[in-house]
Length: 423
Image (tube, rainbow, N blue to C red):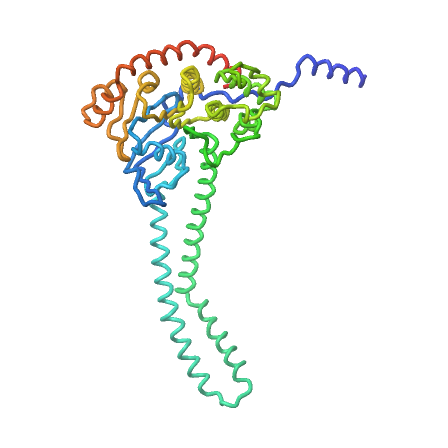
């Protein structure tokens, strides 16, 4: 009978095999438009140079939306992205992730009131102890010790015993006792609040590091996985969630390479290999060109399943076909995964057809923000008008049409591959 039950259980396991953990489901559609990352009154100064780069910047990033950030070089675009990603300390203001403060958030008023009360109690208790205890103790000690003979061999011992006896009065006066107890209680409350604040801040910081990614025009100095002889697979899997199985990691890596259109070429310009071979065959980063390394770096950020993507000039070094694929992937992350995307650039091309809203930054200040049509093409701000007029040349229209057409051509394929990548 036991053997029959075991055989039955084995048959059931074969019929219903245990499936690997599925990728996390995207937020519900009800969450679309909800603020996920917010910076309020951000001021930032570079410590090395003392230059102030942000002047009271306010910005909100919402789920399922792509916000463009346009501006000239050294306008503060990258500094703002680093401040939102809590990579650089800010002078004042705060950053909130999913409604919770992360960096330099203001303390509650009751904490400041507790600080004032602690100082007041400490001063009052110290004054009471001095006037009611130490002054009488000193007088009593001088009076009693003055009666001792100079050659008394027990003089030192008597002095210490008398001092101990007199100082016990420190703990008998109700004013002193109540003052000390009040001081210690309030100090414990403030220390506890600071400790809890630190623990919560560290947890939120970890959440930001795992859910908010800053994608730059080149890999970060602290992210050295895109150098020889790192495997292409290792670079792609470096930021994947730990919950994914080995098979899911491989599947995601292959699908992302296909979505990005990675193709290696030999020295004669002939293509070789496929996405499956690049992942399973042990291909290294040394087989890739500079633009291909940058593409793999960008793909690894998609693999992290971010909730917020801060994209700073991500198309630099990529040809127009790859640019279209990356833009289609960003659209997928916003529309399907409901990620919040901040698209930072000096180029007007992607902003026009990628971003429903845009903000223009100048010298560390947001001078105008709103719908693209109104903000860029009907702006009353002189600097915005000059910038847009200079950017919209004859070649601009042809290039914009070509890039837009490329995105339309690849968007269906990219979405299918992103779904295959469990994204």
